Amino acid sequence: MPQNLRIPGPTPLPARVREAGSWQMVNHRGPEFKALFGRVSSKLQAGFQTTNDVLITGSSGTGGLEAAVVNHLSPGDPVLAISVGVFGDRLASIATTYGADVTRPAFEWGRAATPDQVRDAISGMQAAGHSPRAVLMTFNETSTGITNPIEDLAAVVHAEAPEALLIVDGVSGIGALPFQTDGWGVDVAVTGAQKAWMIPPGLAMVAVSPRAWTAAETATMPRFYFDLKRHRDAAVKGETPWTPAVGIFFQLDVAFELIEAEGYPAIHARHAACGAAARAGLAAMGFALFADAAHASNTVTSAHLPDGIEWSALSKALRARDTVLAGGQGKLTGRILRIGHLGAVNADDIVRALEALESAAHELGIPVVSGGPAAAAAAATGVAVIGA
Ligand SMILES: *Cc1c(COP(=O)(O)O)cnc(C)c1O
Image 1 (cartoon, rainbow, N blue to C red):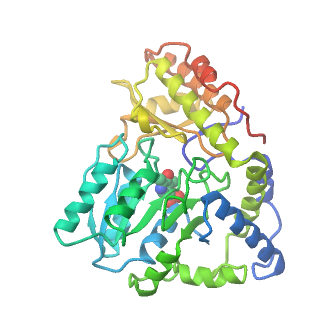
Image 2: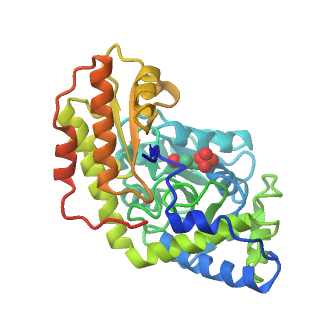
């Protein structure tokens, strides 16, 4: 039985995407690559729901986050970081590392940020004479399994600090969950290859608004490899400034054929069904879900580990059943488990993961109620599946 890889990235590759990774190289300054680059760039704009430039860096998602910071800010700039978990903290740390003056209010992990919290944070900074130059937020906080209501949070930022750039880490959400870069006024949005796009790690995608380009002209944080202006200048010629990850570009091109055949409404519905299945199944088994139900993510589901259960023992028993789930990160290490369900995932994959979890729990003497897999299947009936 092939491994049921249920972590929130890298996500499993469809067969056609795997094949494309074995193709012979082409000249990355030649006509084949230029045509491919044009195709994937316009399909990324559709994926981000934007008419802005979407640049592609040769890095994991974190490289895209670094690009989002260093191209648009200067040392000393007041920045508000809305962080509800490990990835929000990472984005804030990048800004701090490059010298921004970062205000990071405390948020409870497992809950979404609220418009009132963002309003209060902005007015607190303004009262101290430091209206934010940028507001950083995470669309889908992978470490806790929460999706922030970016539309509502963005509206507060635009109303209270209209001059602030809105920079959003969309790595584990864009492409799988509804997201409107232009409609919500997101200045810089970032994704990474190995999450919703069903391709291997190694590319990050960064959408940049005209306002953000203007800010880039005077922003003085140091940058070279991740200089987005160099990426834009090269993109005009259908190229990247440095040698691109050619094989992953082939795979992205093929992945977009699958994405276009399915269509974003069906993709969003499939992720919603997988999220509903994971939550219903875990709850039926007696696991306490970790994330606030009102903002639970449809790409990753988190649940408390029962008292006295070692994550290492449970993950080993799962692995013996060809099932790989994720544990907790940061301060949640050893406290939660996470089931990833983004990219090429169907509800049946969740059902099988829960069957393995039920069986592993029995082996370890963890009391779980039976019927979780059936509850998961029932929660996801009637949803179209993605083929290989
Ligand atoms: C995966 C992920 C990232 C990027 O991580 P990399 O390991 O650098 O690809 C950033 N933000 C979120 C929310 C993520 O889920």
